[in-house]
Image 1 (cartoon, rainbow, N blue to C red):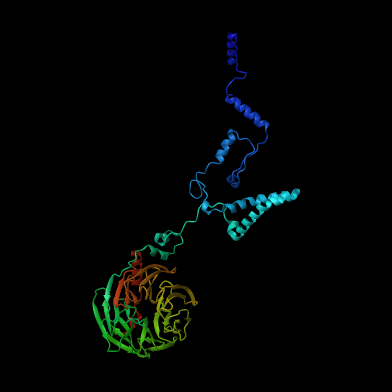
Image 2 (cartoon, rainbow, N blue to C red; image 1 turned 135 degrees about the vertical axis):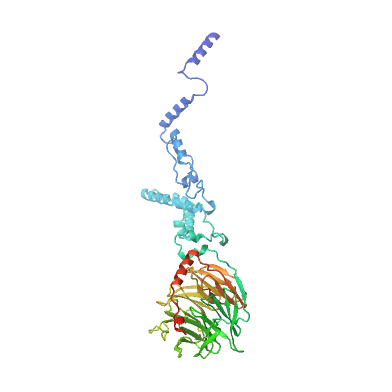
Length: 527
């Protein structure tokens, strides 16, 4: 019998169609799975993760086969590039409000369910009681969303990145204006080198510390005139020679100095109320012109006409060619006139006074002197106005600076009398000058830093602070070539600053313009 059992087992082993012992083959398992899948039309989803429902991914009702698994894998693959430049979309959990996000996502689903329940009318008391805790929780979230305001309605559900913090000032790129497409021409000076230390220092003993006086000027022949005590000195900037022009008697002193546009004629306003004319090439006084009842603290030339402002509040126009020099007298200030400047086209005269006024006088109908009444009267300054400067490339623009109680630099359009701009300089403004080579402005200041400040015009962005004076800077003057500024301080020093060195190409243009300039009428007519 044993041999028959052996033969039977051997036959069973060789039969392929029958059932065999051991695990089923792989092809048989797949066949059974497909047959079972076709028999069962639906399969229940056991669980859905919070993140899946939150992100809007719906579970498939179809049994995933090989192709469907590959598609799911492909759809869930992490993007290779993200908008933020990172490698994955990773939410910032610290900046994400998950409760509010979940409420916003479920809000629409809840409204759909409520509409279905109202349509079918299947609500009962038990369902209402069971949903009461849920509705209370959702009310709390709704109130929180209302408190947060518009951010809850228009804000993001997920926050992927916080806003980058602002960089410290020390890390700000100073050359960023160079790369801006909207940069005006004047901002080219932002990339140029500006020395912040003085090139040369001169001693100025007995320099009078008086805000209302104008005790220094630089001539077209490169000679600096400065009043020290009761003396007036001439310093040749080219050779360095120093010469004493005049010495007043005890008690008298020079209060204002002003060179004619061309030549070596110097006007001196003194403490007695007179205006003196000096030929500095011969160290000789030409004439004395009176008319004021108090000291003359400001002077301004217009060809053969010199205008003088006095402590008595009057302005007098003197014709230096005529024996009867007094052309007219202007009464526009109630206190001392401490600032006086003709415009670059000589059509307007600006005057500043201790009464906080800035008056603009138009040229007279005869073409000589000015009208008797001011064209504009600016009252916006809150302190005495001594610093005045006319823009060389916009002849209708006037800059004015106020004293300690005002500290503002204001720009005026004299065509229509409007205020263009006002900038708080944080300190007393003693003097103003426009650059001839750059669209910039330099101002001299008092307490607390006693500095000279270069501003970009018209944006008035600070370019540099020139420090060195230990007391307030009372006066400034510019060299004939427009590259150097000399400042006089109450610390009894004169400092030269090479802050407006011209571009070589621009210097050639200026040289060609100067060669075609007309000669002074005063030089032609005065014998």
